[in-house]
Image 1 (cartoon, rainbow, N blue to C red):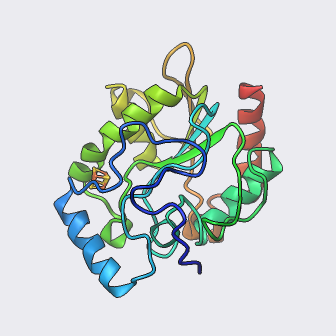
Image 2 (cartoon, rainbow, N blue to C red; image 1 turned 180 degrees about the horizontal axis):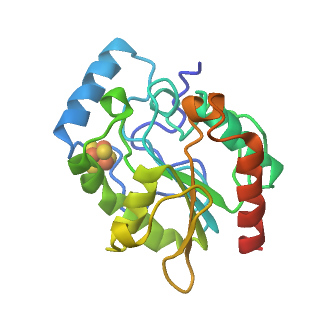
Image 3 (cartoon, rainbow, N blue to C red; image 1 turned 30 degrees about the vertical axis):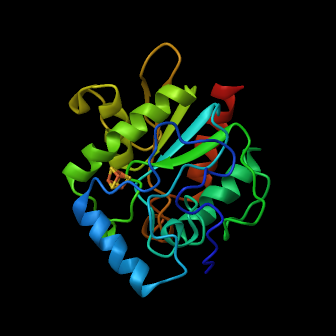
Length: 225
Ligand code: SF4
């Protein structure tokens, strides 16, 4: 596990500024208090809102749920340093979106190509479960980011991310059901694609296999190209 904090509070993400993002944000009181506790117990951890990673004009925007305790929350880079990033970065590399197949430290020099990764909730939630109010509170950052990046494809990892993307557009959740590999046209320029989250649970139980993920990325690559 890396405790590297190359992109700690007050710094930009590796290759693109987060539009409108406050790296010291404490608008969610419960999450801010929790991060204070985590920081005290793990002095080397990032333990702050995690900025997005990747170029600010990426054609593909990947939206996860929230930072993991010993992953993004520790390293300060989305899906970096824990199990959830293993399949994601290996697949990104295979399809030409990443310069390397592994992402364990924020200072490893990894680059994303035409791809950017963010989270529906930028702060670590207790038990990986943000409240609905916290998801809504952070939704403004996601909306600002989507408007600034203008991705052609948004890949939502899991239903929370899917719902958060729809909320940024004020679209009815009931009319856009989440489903692995489902596609939803948000407007003429933007397609939302769903995937099961690449969590340890989903990958170890076979709910999401490497082949399923590859098929999805092959389609995304076609859509973008
Ligand atoms: S989850 Fe988002 S809105 Fe809430 S404190 Fe963190 S950065 Fe701010």
